[in-house]
Length: 539
Image (tube, rainbow, N blue to C red; front, side, top):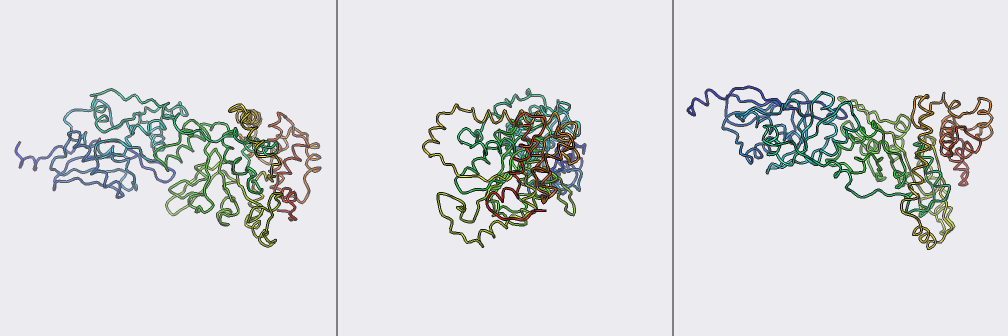
């Protein structure tokens, strides 16, 4: 066939279909890539609502294909992304575009059915496959549409393989490749499927902090176990050096592993933000997030396109150090997530819900300089400065925090503390605390199943009496003996939820007077009185 005839009679315009996906806020949509020849000037045209990253991806695909011996002929090639009105962004389209072009140009038929697989990976100019963001969301989309499997870079394969253990009803085959040449060899049946050792990826990384290097007094240890067992929010107040931040950073180490639904949501949120997920999260451990007090509202709460720190901490611990230093509007924005365990964001074109079931741990000093109430150093803050510092946290926010702990200075010599730490068996303290949390959580789960919730933090108000194990008369007498009538309904409800968790921690099916009394001491108003502050009711 002459060159002139080839221009008049180009290759058939038969469409080659390859699946990929596009993240649209919290949703993930399946997208198909179509490639074909048409008459016109030579070149490659990308159709669809694409970003600059996508448009440059066709050039990366062209160079990578030439590197494996597949050259684009001097004809007009059209690559269409459908649905065409769906806004597409991300370098993960490089691989499906390259595979679609390779199928179009190849004279042999593929051994695998490309339309039964989802492809997502970035291409280097030498043909290497690179990890991309959103791999978990792509895998969930593949499962939802009944695809056979997903083809990604080897670095993304480990995190996607975790989903198979969480969703046994929808087994998804995961193909992790190192380069484009290997992908095409597998598609055309010239090589076997890759064997990627998933467990190796999950065991890498440093171990998170735990309580083995910290000596807790009984009050702090009980508070840590109670907050973890019931997923209760916690505010730590005290002078510098009393262990507030140390306790908060180690709290995730005694939380139980994430349930399947929680882990899927957390993996999805982290996958949107990063190409590689933490090994501890892949192993099912609860996340720990600690944003700086100068963080913006978008970074903490999230946007219509990206999850915030609240969603990234879903199922784990969100630590807000220097709590009063956060902007007032940012603290007020925490009200709804603390109550509903989710963030609802409404924009003109997006309606997004991010799951935010977290253990909120906040820490602050007693005054701007930090030394008010200290026996070691003198505080030089005026009463006006101290009052202004306290008023940075509003009453409604304080009333929504389940436990308020006044952390006192240790009277043990530092050298004695170090000697005590060195004499401890490695891992014994954290293991013991985690075991108590596990037992309390199991006891609560068995009981709360009938009440439509999992942890005591979410007990409905209508079920508190039934959950207490007391008769109505005994329940009323116990509550009235401990809690003053000036207390707000919200603080009473939170106090009783904490009391129910205290009973579970001590292995009791029935709440007692001590449980309610200890839980009330951890309420905002009572903790303020303990510090010597004359406060009115938060009602």
